[in-house]
Length: 115
Image (cartoon, rainbow, N blue to C red; front, side):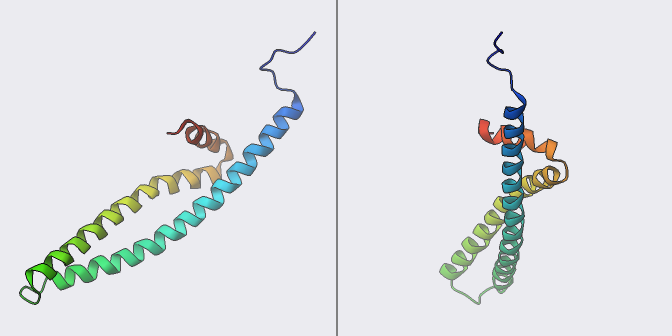
């Protein structure tokens, strides 16, 4: 009697579990790297944003063109900060996956589904 096509034999399950564990480890490493990069990036952006705002507080110190450029710098710094905040939710998911590998399965399924 043959097994149904969708049935896993124990070796297949073991290989699938090993593959999943390897993917989880790769995601954990990537997650830690992203956290470190986000932290460094946010530090740099905070400095840039703070300095732009300090300079903009000095009315009349710069021409209208320079002030407009400084406002653009400030606006783009804020925008980049907001973009980096999106990584916070990913960071939280990565920490959950590291603490409880069973939670990684939905993350990998989401990634493969493109969500």
